[in-house]
Image (cartoon, rainbow, N blue to C red; front, side, top):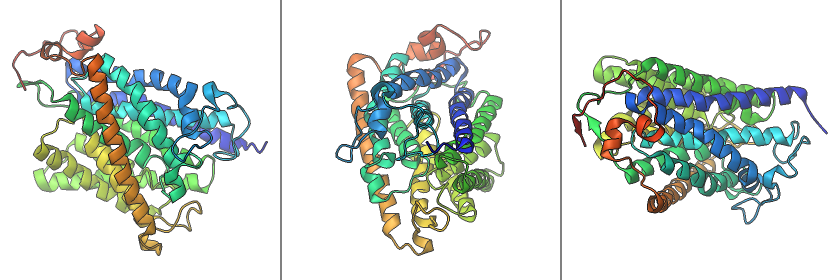
Length: 419
């Protein structure tokens, strides 16, 4: 066994950081929604931890990373973690126990449907979300993971560069969120409480935890305490910082003020965009990728959503979809083979258009596959249970109607609602 204790320690820490991102997301989303829906949206993040863990352990991991079948899916060889033990797996992580690699990948599988929940916030019923989380993980996340990261996966074989989940996590959650927002429909809104977020300290706390966890999310993808991990760690910080600046500058030029919510949204936009590129690009390129992401995601949230009129409640597509798309494309532009021999040179480093075209193909495939399957799953779920809470349930709050609890017992709800 070629165990490296430094690598094991680093990946253990990275795994814990990625896990922390889901509770962090719960606080981020919980602060953004209206008071009567706080526990509901936070619950959806936490329940994803339980549901996805069981699916991933029993067969999800095996189908995503097991022996390839037709370059589309893995196998049941590792069903219920049979054969996934303390020995390393040379195909994925030769210096750490296979069981640790499984656990690290589990954290990515957990947070992805939790991110999607923000698009349907304040109106999706809990039973429908449970079914959606389970089915989406199996039918969308598992095969897409195999295509991109699994040994033999067709996008991996083609040469796609996705270091930490620009396609599998970011674009997949963003596109699914957009489709879900359209299928579930718009929220019931109150004339008195249209302004969200309702609790900015929680938004900042959640956003800070996400940024903190993102270091494990990206750098952990190196599967060891090595130079690639250092590169991903640095590019993560730089892109988050310039994403913050890019969003804030446009906000300033448009409104002559910079909001706290805009600052944290811009930071997350940069972090999303650098995710696929983090282990392949230079620090200077990371600065540019994050800066452009801040501007693009601001326009996606403030212009695109307004003009098209879809109710993506917490801007899942505007940040994760658009940011992930830009980051995946940017990887094909800025990747530098001299920094990571497992990658290739992007367009500006003499690689020609080949790398860029592969990244663009991955964008098209992800949008089509994820969007189509998400629409189908929601239509099937709607046959068995309503997707959307009734007007009365929305007025009374999903906290009370779905869970029998109230985050703010002294809060009085308004009855003047509009569609």
